[in-house]
Length: 370
Image 1 (cartoon, rainbow, N blue to C red):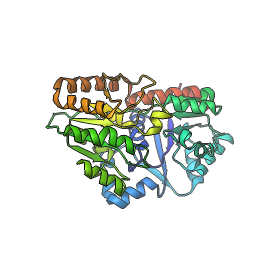
Image 2: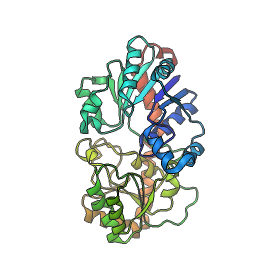
Image 3: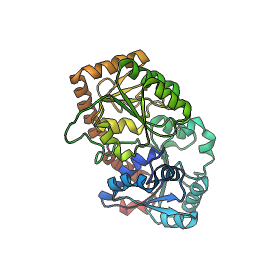
Image 4: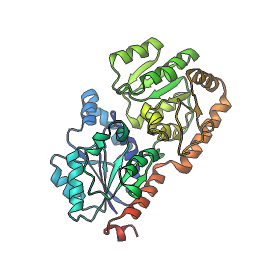
């Protein structure tokens, strides 16, 4: 089957979490024999920031980890839309310009035989609904939502059974435990400070408990303003800057445990949607403790696959236990790995995508998905 995916950027993961999952699932589809094309606009914001901070060397980890992948960079919309419309399945990520999304929908509406899906992996549908509603999706065959609560939003907007839940997952060809265990020390947190969507939570569930327990804390990410950096320094946390996502398995392998601090919208408005970091951490075999987060869809087994701290004091207790209890760490690692391998790999998501495409397929997909 011919598949086209329009992304903000395939090459850059600088403040671009969708690139993590996208790389894994596209590689999986390619290895199954599908013809896959990725499209991204020239001058993408994420890529521009990566090149500004790290130059072309910042792209080396992606190219080394994903030699199968490359993106067609486009300047004008029309030629890219025409090329993509020749595919059997076209998927468009929500971090694209309204003009592109409208142009693809119009091409489908004029009779292009592809199946056209809109892929939403953000909280804007509840935090900035007008930003999503301004997209012209009238020509689309369906929506891929990365959680049930987000899918419910689209159902409320009239999509009915044309919206499908398509969670992110771990690319276990890359995200896996180290072949040989080495020394581990302290905590690691990989995430962006962003727009103060979890600044209080980071102080309550990460910075304060790590300092109280006396565990060294390494922090990787971007968009940390001066005030945030001062807060890190005051608690003894070591800010390491940006790390390519492909390097995360090696970074996890050096640390005793990691912490999940979800953004506020995924706690209050879209419960049940974990970030990609949960999948990747468990796949790498590192014990994880989460700040309050409701696993409304039963993706994992709280208390078995990872620990949950409802208060800062409870986070401190969990971190002390992980520091001192080898068997607890081993149990969490084994259980977390088991649930990822059984349910949450990019191989599983490739199967799910093809199943959705069969259900929502345009006539041209009848033979290629038969």
